Amino acid sequence: MAATNMPIENEIVIFTSTHHLIHAEYKLKKSNVPITLYPVPPEFKEMCLTAITFPAQFKGEVEKILKGNQIEIKGIYPFDTSKLQRTEELVKAKVEETSDAVFLKRILLQKVEMCIADPDKIRIFADFSDDVSEILPYLNSKLPNASYNDDGPTLTFMRGPTLITIYGKKIAAAKVDDENGAVLLLEWIRDLVNETFENKDSIEASCKRTVRLNPIELYKYLPKTNCEQCGELTCLAFAVGVLSGEAEIAQCSPLLQPEFAENNEALYQLLDALGF
Image 1 (spheres, rainbow, N blue to C red):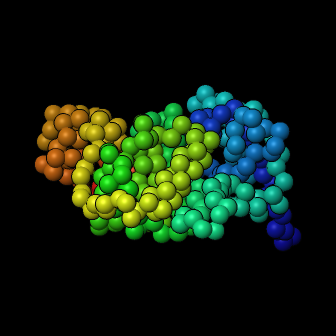
Image 2: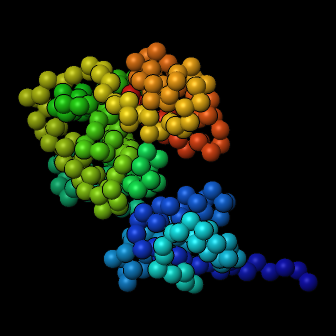
Image 3: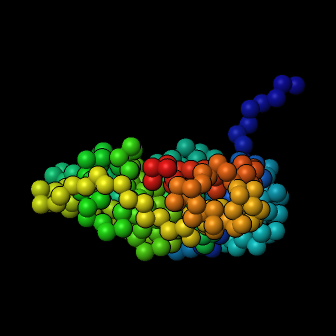
C-alpha cells in the first residue's frame, strides 16, 4: 500500500519567561530538534511573548532536554499545523512611526537569540525601513562613546550594559534584558535617528574612527580557557592585545572548535563592525 502524505502533527511549548525560552531554543537546536518560534496564545502572554512549536514525534526528546536543563515551562499542548503558515508575519515585532515626514519610519525585529556574553540576556537583530548611512557620522559626533567605521559604514556604542551596532539598513544589539526591552531600545534608536536627521544642520559630522570597546566586553566572547595557544598567558591579556592591534582574533585556536562556533561568529561580527 502506498504511503499517504499525512500532515505532521505539532506541539507547542509555553515558557514561564523569555530567559527559559532562549535557553530552550539553544539546547533544542543544538540537539537538531526542528523547532519554530511562534507567538504565544493570548492567555499566556503575561509569561512570555514567544513559544516554540515542534513535530509531535519529538515530544519525548523535547521533554527530556527541557527537564535535563532545568528549563521551566507552563506546559506542552497540541498545536494546529495550519497556524504555522502565519508564523513569519506574527513573530516579528514592528516599531513604526506613523508620520510620513520622518526619516526612519520603521524598524522590524527579525531575530532574537541567547546573548553569548551574558546568558541571562538576549541578542537581537532588526532591519530598518530606510538606509541611515548618511546619519551615522552625525551620530558619531553626538554619542560620546561611539566608534565609527567608514568601511561599513557602521557605528558601535554602549547604552548602559547594552552593546549596539548600527549598519546602513540594520541593527544588532547584545545584552538586551528581554523582548520588551528590545522594543523599547528600537523605539529609542528610531527616535534618536530621526531627531539627529532633523538637527543635522547644527551638528558637525565626524568620520573619525575611535575604538572604545572595553577589553572586558571582548573577553566575554572568548573561550576563557587560558590555554596560552595565542601566545598570551590569559584570555584577558589576549583581548587587550586584539584591541591594541598587537594580536589577531584568528590566533585563538579554541574559537575554531564547534562548541565555540556561535562565539566565533558573534565576535567576528563585532570586530568587523569596529573596523578590525
